[in-house]
Length: 170
Length: 120
Image (cartoon, rainbow over all chains, first blue to last red; front, side):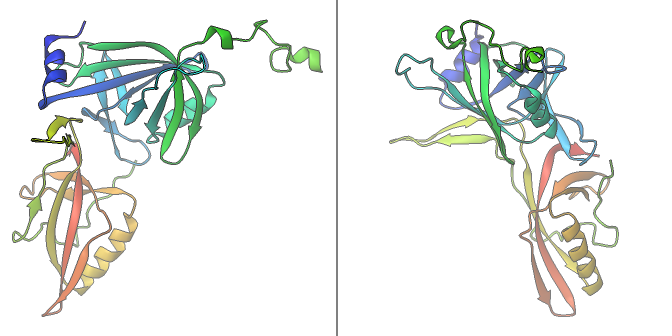
């Protein structure tokens, strides 16, 4: 339930309140989830190799690394397909790129919105979505966010491929 | 991790004359068809631009040129303007202007960007 401060900040034409987006990327291939923040709220530390400051947000006793990201919400669904959102994450950390490259299937992404005046209170929680088709360039990481579409799921659920049944293909 | 520092052989402070600071821009402005535009805060911290001029002799200018090449894509600790007891972490966009003055001096005008919260 959004707080009164959030509702007031959303509705005012000018506000000093800053909406901070927090993204948690999770996948069984990852050793631990990736936590990203849209805001450089505090200085966390200095990078071990470059010495540059590493910024982020402390929320829920975790460090959410500052990596500016944007999400373009989809238009109305067409052709009976599930709507997908385009997400762009600034390519600021090699650790994030390396972790995303290790993922072979869709990752789960959860989004939260908090206010800069109260970093602990989650104002808006967007349900878990799937991050697909990630492409990485020197400046950004792009992907598509959507929910699981039951009609796109393979049936039967398991294909006999060299990946799933390597012994069959010796 | 090895930090880079502003060389001790260079002037440690900008000239008072012409020193300038600009507030970090943390807002986004939305234009409307009629009436005043809308302004919202989009971040809590951003780089703070500062500008100023150093007067250098030929040897210092040569040292500055070597140093600026070495930090072309990097940041370094710089004596905090108006407070020589502290240092701030800055990066230097390559748009400085060096002007030859009379008396074998150089006036080197620089724009630095100060990282937020990075001070020692």
